[in-house]
Length: 301
Figure 1 (tube, rainbow, N blue to C red):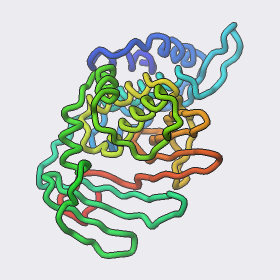
Figure 2 (figure 1 turned 135 degrees about the horizontal axis):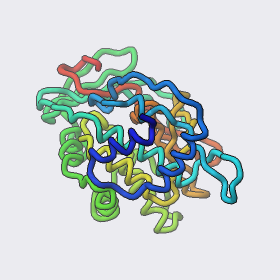
Figure 3 (figure 1 turned 45 degrees about the vertical axis):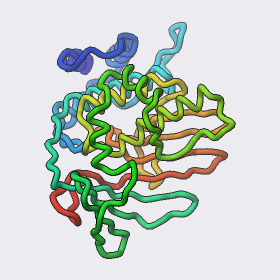
């Protein structure tokens, strides 16, 4: 069974989604030209969920486009490449199994920050019932205490993602409406045109939730990938790097003279690796070095 037939078979098992027939035709053309590839064995995805048939879906990560007029193939971060790559990511997410998370478990996150200066990496643990949190800076002891008050606790984040629409168009309407803005880094200032600022806010909010991948239900994660592909000014760079120099797939929002906002995803399982802003030749951002659900503060996945 080839990649296209497998995609079609798996596509029948998930809810109806936007038409990607043009994308599949391009994938079919690429498959006819390309030599046979070895698929990878199934593995566990760090969206925190068990993943089935990951090898087949991840086998082709290079985007090949056909030039109009019958010319040779070319590569590039176009809207079609974004649709194809993000549809593949959505299919992988949709085929995973929802995690069963207990209220007494903890959400673990390890991050590094590169905001003009490289700061030490730090680890955080937040109990899913929202009553305790813990912090360990690199080279220091674990500190456990009450949860800081605010709108972005992991308990509230979990409640928000579980209430999100699982249709990508409805999800876009939600984030473009009265939903609270949750953006990891700002890309658009007051001088941004309103329509660009609105798209930047939507792109930023989706990416902010993606950082909490282990608590996102599979159908919601799939909708997020498909919604990203529908936002104007979004493209894909097949070989992007995060702020720690790790290579992955870059999902890019291009705000013109205001800069570019990147989400870097693992090229094998599309796990969120980090965010960065590139403006005037300078880059700032944060990297996710580890995440998951654990039983105790101090534990790692």
